[in-house]
Amino acid sequence: MSGERISRLCRDCASSIYGTRAPTAAYADNVARLLFMTAAHESGGFRHRRQLGFARFSAKGAFGLWQCELASIEDSVDYIRNASRRALFERCMTWMDRYPELNDIDLSHRTVSFALLAVQDPRGDPLSCLLARLHYVRDPQPVPATPPEMAAYAKRVYNTRLGAATAADYLRAYERYWPDGR
Image (cartoon, rainbow, N blue to C red; front, side, top):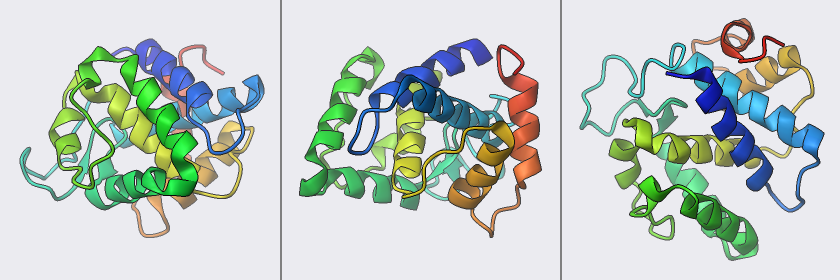
């Protein structure tokens, strides 16, 4: 798995998917690094697209390089389907149109079980990245500017206080896999 490929995907998603205001280049870079950090940690260095210990066809556990759980996917889809977020929904659909492998994905439906199989395949990486971005978009706090702060943010927002990971785990994954080493 190429960290460079995932880095490009994160940069594309970060500059295209946002709440109400388009990001500056610097803020999009922060978001891209956060997304990359999350995937690097959650997937064990881009190796696992299915949470270990769960069957491929079970709805339990987490899915994709970003290890999204079904409840989180449903929350994100519900979030963008809200009438007050129509512009965000349209940005998501337009972004997905750039990835032909996602042509069969329709976020307008409540049932999101389609995503569980799609994100277990490398062709589903754009969808997995998008779902992770939407998870972060739902948090009202801005994405921090430094990797250590991003790691603490990822622990709080993505992993939660109940998760086994630590901020140090996220930071180590970022430092190990980020393509340009900074």
